[in-house]
Length: 199
Ligand SMILES: *Cc1c(COP(=O)(O)O)cnc(C)c1O
Image 1 (cartoon, rainbow, N blue to C red):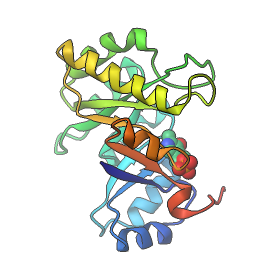
Image 2: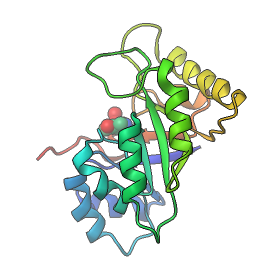
Image 3: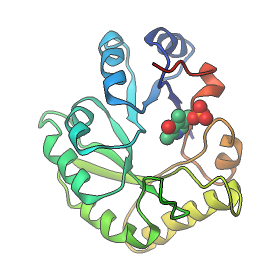
């Protein structure tokens, strides 16, 4: 189990302090905000995770600067990331974001569409499909059941011949629950850094 310290709306100095305390994996949600912080911290051995909404006009910067992307939810975006990944870089690690509750305002692919998307991503040369990510609905069956359901989806895909070694689930409010249900990555922001500083 690995902690991704989600450092959006936190200054580079806060990332450097968390790094000094031993954290090595950091998550950012906004490309424009992340790039200057990455430049400032380029001497540190940080693995960068993109956890924000992926817009087509931002894929190049993500492909060039990040090591992991947690929020791939359609093939067109995956194709752009693969095409734009620099030849010298290793394949970009990709998680498929699942919209578990079918919520209209939320990003993510529906469970019904995940097989086709996973096979499409697996065929792309500069991407490495690693697993699934969720931001579960706040309502309904409760976080524990949503996390268990993501774990079950991974098991089903693996049984269908799609190997996935990573579940990204759980944030500050529910990471213990996610770990109990088998999370490999927990994405923790405020519980590490305190309140965010927008703008
Ligand atoms: C901001 C964010 C987090 C961290 O949220 P906290 O509640 O501050 O821990 C985790 N995952 C994603 C996708 C986020 O956007």
